[in-house]
Every structure is written in C-alpha cells, then in structure tokens.
Image (tube, rainbow over all chains, first blue to last red; front, side, top):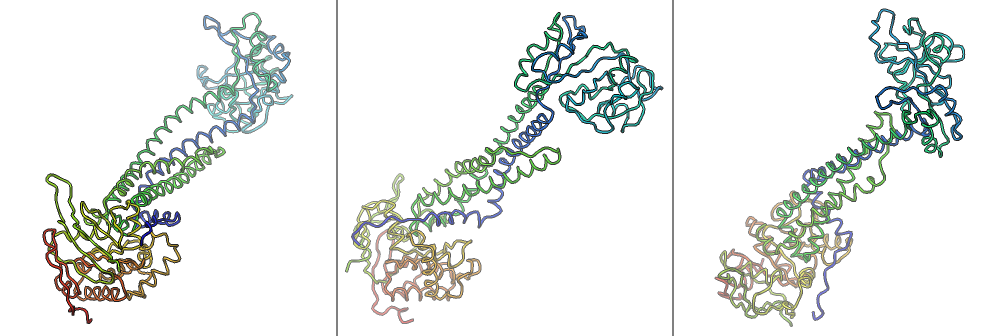
Length: 397
Length: 234
C-alpha cells in the first residue's frame, strides 16, 4: 500500500439518514425540543396571519362599501360652539365636478323613546335625523330587517333605526312602534352596521319631508355624504370645506371614513409588532431548547462518537451528523409550527367571519427561520462532538 | 512480506505537569496473519497501545508503520481513511446503535468507506452469516444476548475485510461460554487470514492464543510464542 489512503467519503443520502438516528431513537426528547421551536413559529404565523386576515376582511369590506366616500359635517368654532352647515351646502357640494352622488342627514329637535311612559331625559343618546331617500343607496348600506323609507313612508310617521339605536330601544324587528317627537312612529326597518357611517348606528332616521314638517328640521344638512370619482377623492376633500361653508371653511369637518379605518388598522399593526417580537423570543427559547437537547445528546452518545471515529469517520463528518440532527429538529418544528399557526388563523378567521389570509413570507420564512435557529443552536454541540478525542470518547462511554 | 504493524521506540505522553508517560519505547512487530494477545494489569498502558495500533491516536515519539507506511506523515483525515478501509475494532461495550437492526449496525462498518447502501447491506448479511447470526438480521440490539451482541460487533469489524482486527477486552462483558464462542470466532477469522490483536487482562484467554505480549508499566514485559497454543485445537 504505497498510494496515500483515499479520504473517506460519506454520501449525502447516508448523511441524511444519519441525521435521523438521534430523533428516531430519542423520539420524546426530540419532539419536545422541536415543540419549543414550533410554538415560536406558530405564534409568528398566528399573529401575522390573524392580522393579515383582519386586514383582508377590512379591505373586502371597504371594497364593498367603497373608499370614495367623503363626509362633510358641521364642525365647531373657536369657542367650541357647533356651527351648522349653511342650507346651501348640500346643493353646492353636489356641484363639485368629480362628485358623483350626494346625500345628507339633517338634524331635528325630536327625541325618541321606547314608549310614551319613558321619562324625557332618558334619550339613550339616540339622535333623530332627517334622512334623504337615497341615503342607504349612496352609503351602500344594508338593512338587518324590514325595508328602507320609500316615497310614501318619507311623508309618514315611519322611522328606520340604526343597529345600536334599535338595541337601546329594545326593538328587535321591523313593525314595532316607538315614541318619537311626541307621536307613535312605526319602525319600518333596522340598519345593519356600516363602518363608513358609524354615526347612523345610534340614529333614528325619519323621511326628510316628514322631519321638516313635524320634527323641527330646518331643511339644512347636518352631515353631507359625497361619492366622488375614485381618483379625484383628495381633490374633492381639499375643496369640500370651502364649498360647504364659504364664510367659515374652518368650521367644517371633512373626512374620508375609509382612511380612518385604515389608520386604526395600522395602529393595531403596531401592537402586532410587539406580539411578534415576543414570538421571536419564543423562537429563541426554542433554539436554546434544541441546543440543550443536542449537548445532552452529544454527552450521552460519546460511545457512538468514538465508535464512528474508529469506523473511519472524520471529525467533520461527526459534526455534520449532529448539525443535521439539529436542523432536522428545527425543520420538523418549523413545519409543525406552520401547521399549528395556520390552524389557529383559520379557526380564528372562521369564528370572526373573516377571509383567512397568511402572508406568503411567513409560510416560506417560518421553516427557514426555524432551520436557521436550529442550525445556530446545533453548531456548538456539533463542534463538541467533532472535537472529542476518539480515545477519550471510547474510554469514558 | 511487509509486517502489518511495526513499532520502533514508540512513546506516548499525555501533557500535564509533570507529563504523564504511559508508554516507554515500545518495539513491536506484528506479521500478517498473526493472532496475538496483549496482556497486562489495569493501567499498564494496554488501551493506549491499542489506540496507537488502531491509529486513533498518535505516538508522542518513535515510529509506527502500518502495512509499511509511516502513519506520522498522514493527516487526521487520512488516518480516518486508514481506519475505514484497513482496520476493524471490537470493544468490550459492543457499541451497537440502539435504534438500528443487526444488519444496519453491521452495515455501519462500511458507512465511511464510501460503499453504496445496497452493497453495504449485502456485505453485512454475508458477515452476519459468517459469525453465525444469519437468523438475527432484523433484530435490534436489545433483543440480543451479550454473546450475540459481540458477534454482531465482530461482524461489523470484519465487514470491511480489514487487514487488522483490534479487539479490546472482547470477552470482558460476557459469561465464559459466550466468551469462548467469541474467541473461537476470532480464531476462525484469523485462520482465514485476518491479523488479530486481542487486548485482555484475562490470562486464560491470553493463554489460548499463539503469541502473548505482556505489558507492565508502559513497557513490554514479555513476548512469548507457543508452538502449540492451548486453544488452537478447538
């Protein structure tokens, strides 16, 4: 034998099988270590998934409700006095070119009660508003029960209640009566909640002609709702205040409700970041768990390490075997965490009636991150295994 | 013919203050086809000698030739290759891997030689038949008796057809009957051409082998050959 000995080779498929020996022969321990990391991944997936599902739901709602709605309402002046919109506001706003549709509600002097026996001061914070007949249409609103004010009903003692208003009045379905402005009014319908016009949730709506005639409405609008051309919404927002009240534009409150909703959603996103960093800590703890399992495993398996060295394994091959074990545990943990987190997201979305959505980057990134964490955790134990002198390993086993 | 092992003034020291000298100037030649015992009390340096013979460790001084090659010139990776291809080990504690079947354990003996899985499997089955365990292929270590475990370990050592088989107290964990069977097996392997070095403190076992080397305090105490070894006729 004069040629230098060939270096030993370990086929990749053999290495892969070697890496499964530890997890296979120490199932419970490996499963528990993998569980640690999988909880971290599950937390990340669940948090990002629930947040994404929530956003998907909101965007779907906004899509349905339309994000081109602008509300123009009476604001307050410097002395905190409510400055009503001029009676011309509604008409003027409708004349802005990109405005496609206009509707409004007007203030009345009336209050609404369950019946004529309720003391006058117990208003339940419900406002009685005069409503244009196209209000529901322009807001893309819908009714929970009953029907909207038609041409006949808007001139009769008939009301449509907001969702909250109906609850406070104890009205469960259309057809009941309420005591409104000193008269009995029939409840024609109950509105479903509308995110774009939350103020209508606590209102009792009466037809515009009826409100003007019987409830002291002065014919001017309290809030004007505009549907603008989707790409010209900011332009309309800019001119709306001056158009509505040229005399004092600063007392007009102009807003785009869909913006408010998105802003609120982003505020929730900041909280998500906090929870996400906690999930990251869980992931780190999972990595420490794997490192611990591996260190114990290397100490227990000194005999095996010594034997493999005697059979011709190089230190690097021993290190690769143990590193692969850690990586496999991380991978299994990552996949399990992904499954667990996805189940959570789907369950939560189902319970909330949201469309379930998990960001693509967590689906692909989850297992990758857990493998990386496990690989880092496995480096030290693997190096220890590789450095163990074969004679010591055999002797102390 | 080139000797399998040739030790010239081999010394082994472990660092420390003062350094611990375990072997002092060992001169030893093992010819191909020999069957010999290294005997000595605990702490005499037997295991250290075995580690050097098996290229698991390097001498501090002196020269060690294996099949004519000076091992001091080889890198760690090359020494590993020598072990993978040319040396088989049998240990007192068997070191069978608990999760693997008998065949898989024996096939592990070829894992680091780059042999394909199918070939490893076939060679393992053959080696198991050779040690008389052809009926135990699918068993796991915990389903085997001590004697059977050691025979599996011997099959693992011989599956790569090594030039040298090193056995460290191969009967140390066995009852006398299983121990005798193991010694018989080693003798048979030797009769088929494998050089076998058995390290033991069992004087009866040593007495049954054709050559005995006594180690005491890190030096060779005696080196004797029997023309008619007691166990040779079995």
